[in-house]
Length: 296
Image 1 (cartoon, rainbow, N blue to C red):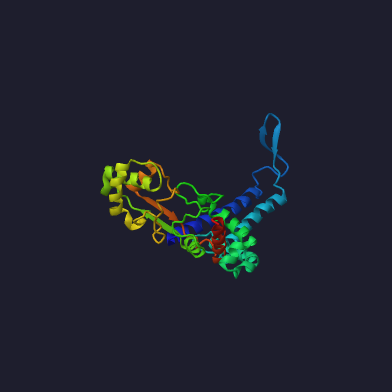
Image 2: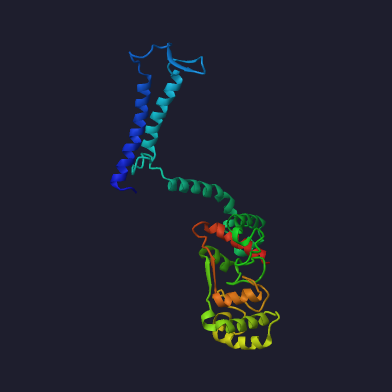
């Protein structure tokens, strides 16, 4: 919303420019006694013999200019363009988007209607539901999780049976609807360089990888002090917190020595954005059913 000064500045300049175009047309087409008559040579010559005649513009062309002026005033009366004046139609980009989105949702309602009352178990077994869910996934989720839903570094693989927050249908619906924020705190200040190396060795050993046994033994003590609260005494994680299982060979940020050490020292911040503002409940249910089917 413009303040009063800018509002009137825009109105005056806009209207003045349109009126100036109208005046220019009148002035340019007005007969003048001191000028040559229609059909006479004006005296302007180019290329030696190319002369300019005093002939008026074609009427259709002149009327076209007048039409654009009238069109400009009509447009500014109907639509916003004169400062804070909203136009008699009260049109806005937001209202047009809302109207178009509503029309799309209404048009698609017939497609979703047969699937609306199906149970989660029935959705996962319904070919039409999975086909539609797959298309919705490709349009809304593939940018992070990949077109094959196998994810990438920092983006979880949705085709296996390893879940940070559990993989049942209701949990998936909650995750898609409200999003998730996973935080792994940084422990560099508490563990120092030697402690990070020791915990890294223990985590690698715990996941079945080769590691220095002496460092791993020291790392277990530190793990039980700093890490057990989230990852559990056995290192199998905690779905309630989104803490990953450290005993398997599935890694969100990589399972190399350097990747694990970086996670311990600097922490991690993972965010799954909420989709409730972009997807309807029906669409979220279908995506959840599709994702649930992938891990099966």
